[in-house]
Image (cartoon, rainbow, N blue to C red; front, side):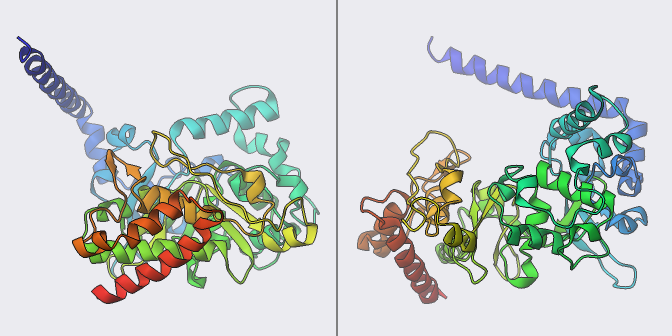
Length: 430
């Protein structure tokens, strides 16, 4: 009798799956004319699909010529709008090519938010401007806070945007000057003077900063200068283009040991670079998961592909202002929660200390150590080491101390030793 229950549940599950598949096929047949049309038509050349009509409540226009000229096209199933309900994050894969270059390359297109988040953005703009949930965004934007810096305002100042997003949770003037100077959605980039931007460009900049500052992170800390982020290409309306890096880090979870060791070493190097660099900007990763990193297929290089939740602290400003305990080393608290990709941190403390171990903690706990859980797995990227390494015990000890230190300031020392040890292992297996 006890065995009948799982058998019945199994049959029910299969029946539900078949019913869902049948419903999808019926929908596809009912929409076959539009289905065929969407397959044949390049919707990335459609102004309304790009939501160019919503500018300046958009992310930019620097790539509009490429989109509207048909130089960017969806790959395979990305052409089917019927499947958009599965694409919650609004991320698409496409091909781009200049006629004179010959050949095409893969790019990633992002709307920077879900359909619901974008709808909420529109409603928020309309309510602030008119008091109603719907309106003409072109008319509404000049009546919001995104337009209060229009005109002859000289600089983008911390008082104007502090707390709008993680990027500017505690901005310095030096950081904001960098954002404006490197803003790629203007023809007059290179100047830190806000008044050199058109009014529409200022509004686009501020809206991006408030809604999802990822494009500004990629522009301000570009891959061309050695920062570990995907390369920003441009935007048209509410579609942003970045270069395709490669498969996400998750696809390497069961890769050969020597490959995983190399990837782990690179991740620790990224944590170090973002924490300590010559520019004295500390970039703290507040969302660390296997999906937020990708690996180049040719060079095997690890790159951050989701930079929405990056907090930037200016160490020069902290040393100058000397807030309480500014020179006391800050140790992040280990978070042994039951959810995936947990992190425990205080944004206020990250903004007020010069020496912080947050990035080491985030990488060790969420990606490398036995505490890392993702998609129903555990053990982290360095799971199941060879018997001689497991028997030695040093790797496990360093990972444990890096994720959940037992000694005061133990994570700082463990992270340093772990970087060296992984480099040694990686060199030995090459």
